[in-house]
Length: 521
Image 1 (cartoon, rainbow, N blue to C red):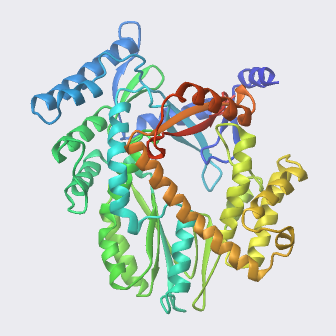
Image 2 (tube, helix red, strand yellow):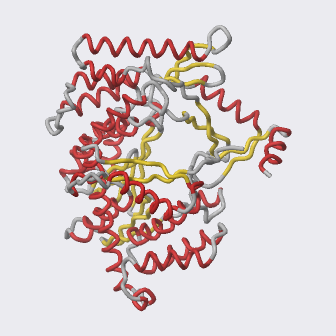
């Protein structure tokens, strides 16, 4: 079947490719139009610098060699200046490493509000790029410091946001007033268009903060800044037999990108934070999106946002929305005369453009991921829905989504029972769920946010002490339960002679992977 589809796509000059929104949908259109849009994007973008054409006289291997030599020369300069020691120089040098490659750029399709074709760039895996090891190391040592530094103003996820908002509005008296409005903002195309100089300026401010522990494994602030500059100067990729250098922004799949953008936005939001804290308002940000409450004049707020927009580079756009009913992180948040009401949001405009009841796109084993997503969706429903009636409506929506996508009623009922059995001891309690027992369930679901934070802290502690082992498990190997049992037997037999205290035992984390990733046909 797949060969037949590919034959007809090639014959009719069509393209079938996954859409950019990470929904389980694909775009079918004219190949020539898609390629023209992709070419125009590269040619008109100010984020990429053309380096060289790849041909018989200038092969990709030769171009890669030049880039590697330049990188190692810059690294040696840091060593000569005594900013890094010989161990770091050898750790990050790539002249003797194998499997170093230039990643390539590809595009995913999307649609604008008028149903016109849009394309968004993606860079293939950076795992074998020359900067991957250095970027990963910087991310590893800096991310825990930044997360501690910014914890009071960031949301871990939607559940963390809803838990904090619920506490602010219901546990602290009189903070949510009948006239209080909600404000959301979103920064568009930040990772693609922010200048490297802006990223490094905010990064320097972060390193210099007295709140940041500046002990970076025998690296000074200056050394860390120079190494980060080295990463940003050496992001290269290929596209249609040409080599380009990234001069603005960073690829999404580079380990350091998310951290750099968050540091930049934390610095950008400081003037807004000062005004919000003076008014005892609620505030938080999740990556490039923010939410806060507001009790002052909207004219003053508009002036404040105008000032914040001026602080961005010209290619970065800030959009805002203010009302007593807003949407944020797939939730509807409403102020009803001083009382908070929340529920899950299903974007009606998107559902009109696409079919409803879509399961998310998953890279690895779909059935396992969808089973996990079933549980996640029910947890989210309980955390988001302030009323029992809204929770029941969302539960029915989740069930319909799975049934519409070919899952059996037995699958749905089994996973629903598994979810409830974690929080209720008897079958009677599950069948007799009502407004009172739902409030108890919701409190328990909020406690899962705290559990997740503790697990992340524990994982970070194990990683820091080199006691975390990550292994990949392929579903082609068969039953996961049998694999776990066999692995435990082999591990025990090999290490039975070693007697360790419980605190010294390593933590082994299995990550499920699947051989096929379907982005296009």
